[in-house]
Length: 79
Image (cartoon, rainbow, N blue to C red; front, side, top):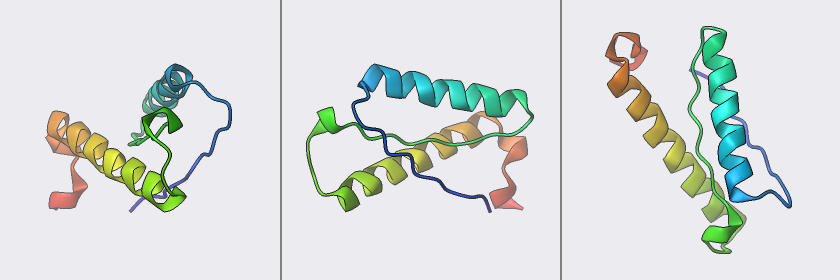
């Protein structure tokens, strides 16, 4: 278990959102932890907020899977 957070940004360019995501991950990893992030940007199409959150959540789980594929020794889900 970990905690999940949602950040809703307004007037944020997709490139800035991706950079912010990368910066957060790097900062967290430098402190000895890991995090998985999934993003959704309005440029991908306007849908209901629930759909946007679902897409971001699915992407977060893809990011988490990729992390553990690259660091299998840290995967606590298999213990």
